[in-house]
Length: 194
Image (tube, helix red, strand yellow):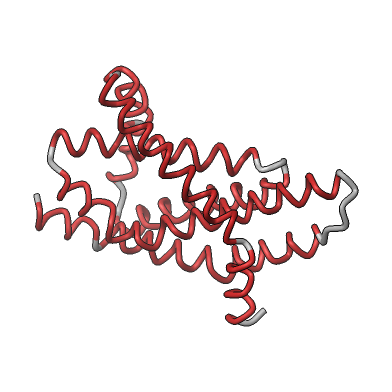
């Protein structure tokens, strides 16, 4: 597939992309207000994040590899396990949105919105759209599986090949770039605003 074909595919799945963006934004807002109204919820989710603190004690190149592999695994699962009627992408988008909302609330309360933006934007402008695209492709695969079961004529195998193509050609390299930015550039940006 050419870049032009890839762009045409993205235009053809705009509704799934819109759905993933909407669900992510909705659950991020829900997470933010849940943390505001019930600090215990925020505390429980933050404990989960604290278990990943050991990553930051590793050498930078290892941190980058861990971040890349974590994001690649989440994206691949959201995309390819969308064949389970879209349940895995739904779980990935809602849990990540909710968690971001909780983290955003905590960061804004403790250190301010500028610190939050410095910690998210440098790598997030690449990482977030790519993860949401993976989720959108997973939703599409789940939808096509449902249509196939309902005896609609759909090219599920061709769609799965397209998903793998996007995973290899776009998702993996861009997530690697985002992981490098998160490891080496985001901390510098945070140090400027801290």
